[in-house]
Image 1 (tube, one colour):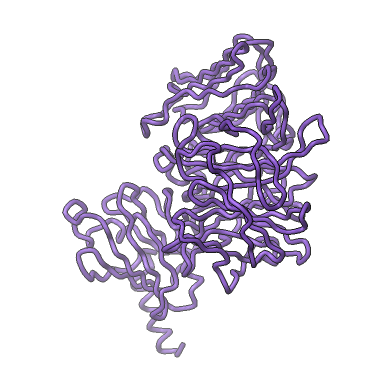
Image 2: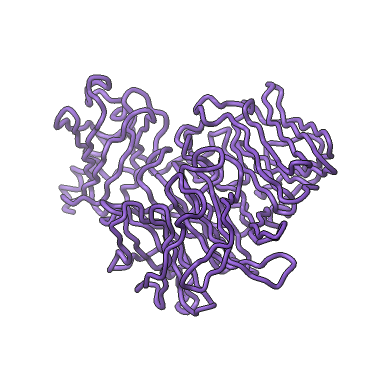
Length: 564
């Protein structure tokens, strides 16, 4: 830059932006404005008002559109701000071209919107937790919206968890892959954004595989543009950054719902397999090189629940407890159609020869009988040949309305999967990972906001969690009927959705002698200690549950100890 121009630029910056506020916008019409930003801070903080409609923001640098996003820009009140990183654009200025879609008769004139006064530039963005319902030991994003876990894998001592992420608000939009890492499945470190939208579309769910032959991590994801197609990207730095394949997409279809590829190495056939969701079936492919894929077969007609769209598949071989036999488990997430409404995870047990999956049962089976367990998938390359699953801990019936704003949604605790036999049938076993047991502190009498409760029972039992406000969660195990239920009708705030207050009931295949409860700030996860039953439910008490009452058993409380 010439000296004169630089001096003028600095003077302009000092005159207009010393307070950190953005400049005055240029009004181009009733619903259209532009805002020129100088590089005077890494971020521009965009004020969000959740009840407003999305505004479409085009980021323009040197007359080129470099990014597009949708954000609910504040009209008369800013609920919170989200950061747009403009430092990555090598230009002295960035132009925001903004189109509003609200009704001008009710929102007023665009020039008077609060967003212009509240928009600021800064070098930092405060992610300090300000939410009383943010979990202590469950994975959450630092800020913004999160839904499906994506691309999970283990390599060189670290678990990698990607997730559907909206960096520009706490409701679903702008799907991108966020990224977190952990060494123990409990303590998570936020990493930079992994895969961002491009000309093919936003980035929907998918998977990662560790390609040991080339020492690479290969991601597969759905590009959600005008149609849904499948794309791939490669990482040579253990999943921190990805380079997209220059010949994407690798799979296409005229079907409107064509998504969520899950790839894995099949040692039985010495080839890669890929399973993805298409409407209300799963399609299976094979490949030798992870780029060229051959269609093998479809699965699903006449089996399982078909009340909603099938999504987020997974397919794996598991050992049957106490036998030398192995069978295959096919995970199929569905929305709606869950046993208590909304989204849920069903599964199928059978055989797979690398080409076709055959199911051995006719009944519909659910992996978790709570309201808040969806998009379940497993880690690739997990140590000790473990199959470790994580799910999204919410329900599409109310996920956008739960009473948090800095962030929305958490993941379940990690769970080990296996198979067990009961009355001549084979079922999936779901057990909290052993890392959760290692996180137990010394036993204590009172509940804490983050704890595990172990209830030993000899028959039917009632368990009640309560606080001083009279809010409570009531659980009942019926030893005769072999069922377990959780009633969250009076658990706290249920006002945000008519679908939230409910009782969920699960079959227990065999006698339950020990119940394990994982309680966190906004969730309760219940497990039969033998892995024969799992139930996940959100709760939003006005204060933490502090008291437990057990009839028909004895409770032991272990606080979950989080390392600094």
